[in-house]
Image (cartoon, rainbow, N blue to C red):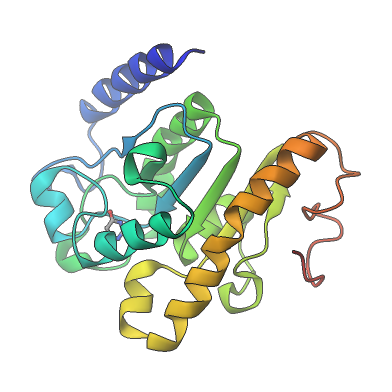
Length: 213
Ligand code: URA
């Protein structure tokens, strides 16, 4: 698909999902489907909109968003170059954690976004995105910054930028993980996406413990 076709497909997708009776729709001001370059190489996936995002209908526009913009800047990119989305598209009341049935209700929307954008790399911001993309049972403390292959996609979990705002010691860790992104993209180009024989990016069988890049 061309960039224009992807944008059209995303617009149609959002229009379809915004009509649906989703669990948090009645308590939210706006849906926050996500935004950015529909043809992005890198897709960032956060957890759920907060207060500012709910008011503006845009992802990561509060304090965590400012920090995310800085992190994206570290690799020479701008917010408009990448795509930014969330697991949950309506703000949970009081910013509470999403409930399992909410994750279940909203993630088919995200899955369709991923299929349309077809990014080279997905960066999972925090535990909820990591669990959706890589399954349960992983500890973000152990696996942050390690790209993993799942179903032909490369996924790198990192700490959530909002969490790092409260944990000064996590900020340099997040920055170091972001700085790996150009190298990971290069490895994906060199190795192709399909094969289990890929060297630099972990396959499910070998992934659990080995340190990567
Ligand atoms: N935190 C998220 O996970 N997503 C946003 O859009 C904003 C803050």
